[in-house]
Figure: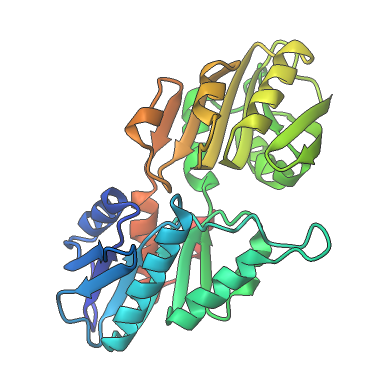
Length: 319
């Protein structure tokens, strides 16, 4: 699969080694030799146990929980590669933590997503490969190239396989106004109508469903979002769709399954029949319930890395 010039090397942090191994295997490679450990006071130690001089290095590390540890580990690995004279360093971050803090919502708020972008650039990354940034403008926070892959390129084919195209009893639902563009892509490909949940957020991780814009009565509805954290919005929306809108069945899909706090319990007890997520974040065994189905992002990232290495356009992967 790899044909030209200088060596390509794939390294993994400790956040998601299974995904990194799958990506490396898809490229016909094995993971680079590295060791991440901790000193007794909690400081992170990184050892790169093979030469990377002049190599095209891809380090795979989603900055999921524990977010701060995984972020610092990524920064230290990037610094180690830079000081070892790597030819180019690409930070492969399937899920970028702090991406929801992309603007000031009240006086004296930080813009933490910008700070994280500055840290990654200062650490020595030459480019970033990620998926479904919470806000597309975060790409502009980086002063290096950013390729933002789309989860819909995996979720939509799965939805077509499950629900077909043009089904009269299917409706796509955006759980809030922020996901309308993403949901509209589903409606175009599935050839079904769109409905929108109008909600009012009272405080972080708490939302109140106010109204349903569109007809969902007696339909199988597919809620579409970029990430699910505590699942409060998702579960409340599902309840409204069934109890207020008269929906027959509720399905949901999202790129990032953060699933923190009471998320699993809420989903288990909700009207949601099935939740489809991508494995940008590893799903812990205790969170693997029957209602949750996980699709692999490894083939998409494998192709994106190969195209980056070969200096070939990545844009066909966005369609």
